[in-house]
Image (cartoon, rainbow, N blue to C red; front, side, top):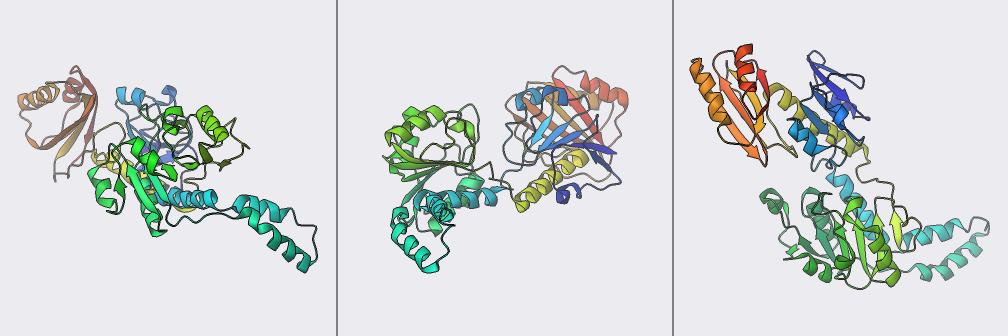
Amino acid sequence: MHKIRTINNISEKGLSRFPADHYELGDAITDPEVILVRSQQLTDDDAVPSLRAVGRAGAGVNNIPVADYTDKGIVVFNTPGANANAVKELVMVGLLLSCRGIIPGIEYVNSLGEHSDKAELNKLVESSKKQYKGRELKGKTLGVLGLGAIGSMVADMALQMEMNVVGYDPVLSVEAAWRLSSRVEKMESLQMLFSRSDIISLHVPAIDATRGMINSEALSQFRDGAVLLNFAREEIVNKDNISEALDSGKISQYISDFPTPGLIGKPGVVSTPHLGASTEEAEENCAMMVADQVRDFLENGNIKNSVNFPSVNLERTAGCFRIAMANRNVPRILGSVLSILADRDINVVDMLNKSREDVAYNLIDIQAEPSEDLLEEILAIDGVINVRVFEG
């Protein structure tokens, strides 16, 4: 029986993908193999000895101490792209808010509640609407920073709205490049992106290389009066520098999904309460995606969409037992394991070894059932982190 601890409200559509006769799920499980989580902060205390993986029902993993968990051999999964459409639609709202007098117009209309005469009300509205005149998005240039699952969808959406789109992503994957429209003009640098754009939309993760990247130096490269949209992560933007840029008129608006002390209520700032993935569909998609990934990991040892371990997928060999091993990415560990198997006359039918930075992961299909003392001998090899066995 596999044990999974659930934290936060994980969609039932995801939880239902775990067969009840093989899985025990609940928020009170103290010795889980897997933790499923949305936004709650995990700590080192959550990394109990039984824990083998964490499944984040969402894209960001800021609430998970990934480096510490990697050292313990705990695989951290996320669900890139599962909430992309929800975020894209909210970015569309941000684009419209940036160019039309929607919010002040609504506030004005709500102030007219005491008027009961329809003719008088219409006259007031018609005489005042010019105060809320905006601009059309058609023909404006949108700069998309980060062209992954969400960024590429935002770019396509903007093209459909007849905007010009420029993009920059220094680590654009082959898969993302195939998704991207040829009409998106690729920029060679951040400076080129900023200087070409009327509106800039951020779609990069919060990592060491991106935290605070929108600072005074970056903002100085913006067009005067540009608009900045941040539906990615709060930490990417330096709030003090944004405030200064708004005061000077360097940027005209900052539209963000992350309410920030010091910016709330400031002229030119529009904030929503972290609504990016807050749709029923996105929560269901994330839960189903992470459930499928966790099941494949627990039942077959395969890894897909991990932020700290390599992607590994090896078809099961009929009638064979499988060993899954996580280890430090150093020489001779795999050779030592194969030597142990050879010394016991155990034939290796199939295997796959991959590494990612400081860790490696191995799937080894063998014809004989591994004994406890064999597994202990493998685990005793210097650099081996953990070992699991799957029955044939």
